[in-house]
Image (cartoon, rainbow, N blue to C red; front, side):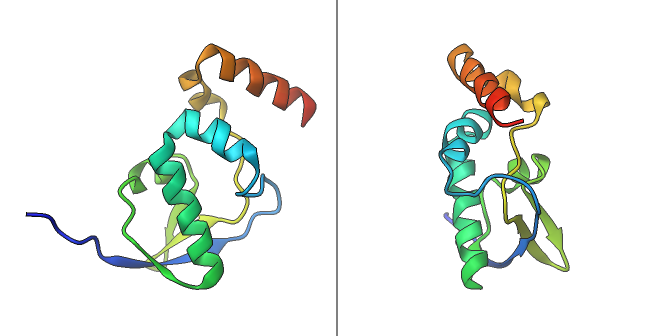
Length: 110
């Protein structure tokens, strides 16, 4: 039988540096690193946190926790307000063309 995922509170974890969640970088490079489902959940969590709403318990929560995009603070999911660049240790997942585009992006955005 299917179970309904429970709603969980989400808050923004402020960051001073990073990339705005709506920037094409997030959809291009983080999708290549984590997959489209995880990134879609991340963006839903950012939107919910900005509106002060809850979200259903994310299916990809373990992936988002490992990538340091989400943490658990006082029983709430804290999602970063600005997305960091994909860490070096996750870039091995990039196909060669995406890896080259990311290298160009890093060079242009030191």
